[in-house]
Image (cartoon, rainbow, N blue to C red):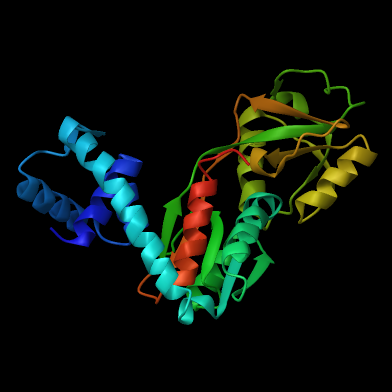
Length: 294
């Protein structure tokens, strides 16, 4: 039994999805399946119940994971301690993110990372998903937080979670007391939205079209904080991802429906590129934070 077998087992046990686990590990799904079969042959028990598309841990898998997880954590701590005295404590990470995730998610993860590795420099740019994909592919960025790019075979995309976009208005807006709002009700509503270069705007335009609504776009801003401030000061409405929203007495966040705008952010890596340990560690923080409330 080798360490890689346990790493592969842990990834599948964590995601319960061979495709997502393979993307996380940056290996092919066939390679991952082969390694899991080798591990099952060695321990003499099936570790996963593969019923159609559903994957679940067997009793043997649950037992193995309960004993294995503390061991992997000890190994990771030991490796990190070694890196503390070597090159992992030096260098620079070049990260880019779309605006929504640069409000809370990315800053909180960068803060936690710098708390553990204060000698590493982290450079964060706020760009559109299209620009991020282009710069990761060209090697000008080490890591991106964005959406799955179309026609980008040179990039790995690791989905993090599904996020609902919400209507945001100030406390005096006509819709402020509503529990839910249908997209068609935003027909001719005065709004502030991200510019067309952003994939989130493309998603919203599709939702408006599907609902038969044509909002009056009074302003376009390419950053979330100014959008929220403009909504506070005017009667404009906006649509912003839940990740970027912090409770505020003067703003109302209202779910949308028919259709509900939903997007899936993730990590963008360049295939076949060297991934320094420090970049992997920051990615791990982003991955962990995306499963927990901020």
